[in-house]
Amino acid sequence: MGVRQKKVAVHDLSLGAFVSDLDRPWHETPFPIQGFYIRRQEDIQTLTSYCKWVMIDVAEARDTSEYEASNAPIFARRNAKRTNQEVIQLPPIQVRNPQDYPVSSTLKREVRQGNRLLVDVDKALSDIERRIRDGEEPDFNSVYRVARGMAGSVVRHPDAMLWVARLRQHDNMTYRHALNTAIWALVCGRHMGLEPAALENLAMGTLLCHVGKLELSPSLLRNENRLDAGDFALFRTYVEKGVNRLQAAGMSRAVISIVQYHRERHNGSGFPARIRGDRIPLLAKIAGLVDYYESLVETREDQTPMTPAQAVAHLYEMRNIEFQEDLVERFIQSIGIYPTGTLVELSSGERGAVVSHTPGRRLWPRVMVMTDPERRPLKAARIVNLAEVNEGRQPDKVVSVNGCLPFGAEGLDPRHFEVTGAASRWSLKHLLG
Image (cartoon, rainbow, N blue to C red; front, side, top):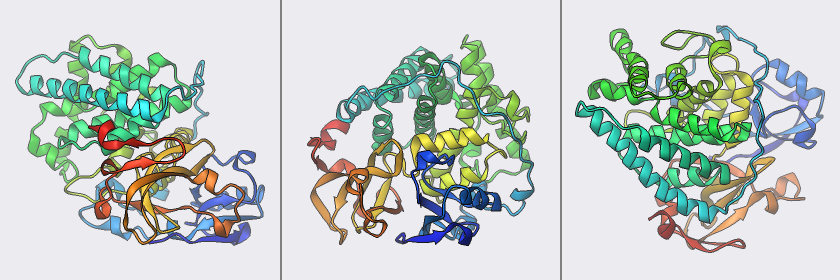
């Protein structure tokens, strides 16, 4: 389904519309992301203070009935009672000694290093799983080393690890979830300016958030989204089991607190202690948010995943309900509506994968184009920087992202392409192995 942009006067906006552009630069307004849904009348009132007209993406105000199906994750279904849930407002998050991390490595170099690092992550997590399954005490030192390596990689270039992880196939669901969650957390933490030591703890904690699940039966985990009350009570014990194991191993309090609180929620609806947002440590708040986001977008046999754009919209609706508002906004700012590795279709009809983003223009990423407008595969892919292509163009001439595609759609696999472009020529087969 294509996206059609439409110019609309602010006073004619309706609830559910997706605002994709403004009549003035984004940085001159208080709106936190370049693209957001109108979810209440107050949003329209705020817009009238800054803009006369906006552009809306017609297809983004899409029907969500496909996620009402029984095979959709329970947390992805629309809840008519959501508007009645308690909204909790807290002061904005303040990061002490915020760091400014410039990009200090090329995507090509960091992808190469990231691919080697992910091999080490696989070995470390697989060894822990094997030891726990065999009743042995796991050695967490290897996880610390890979967590430190991941944090360093994301600091040097925030897109590389996302790119490598998105293209790296793995049959182990627990491993894939832990890896992706850790990378989302690091990208968000880097954007927020967390110090290197905090980033390393964040990576370590998110990699180990689900270690307690290794003590639960595989049949329980396979039905994680379809548990009755009794089974869910047993499932919830994974948090305590993980905390106990990490305490016995002498893990740092900073890492343990991430595992302990990552399932707590801003409005007190989480578990195991049902504490509210003002008592949840910052790193655990980040871990909980990215863990939930990954659950929305990850591919599972028993559910239809959301696209990144739909997951972002879903998170945005949960501001100050299950997740703190400014944390949601900072996370969305850090990954964009179309995160690195997302397969997309452009308004030109071409298809490709998001490679990286331009700061301040998250809706116009760099895309590795893999097909022509008729969707025929190219012999060699090319990098298109939409921010540069659209500079100075009239709205009706802009090349934009129409929407997200399922990974592997119609044979679209970035690993099978060489890339040509102004910046570089390199082979994904060589870089990703």
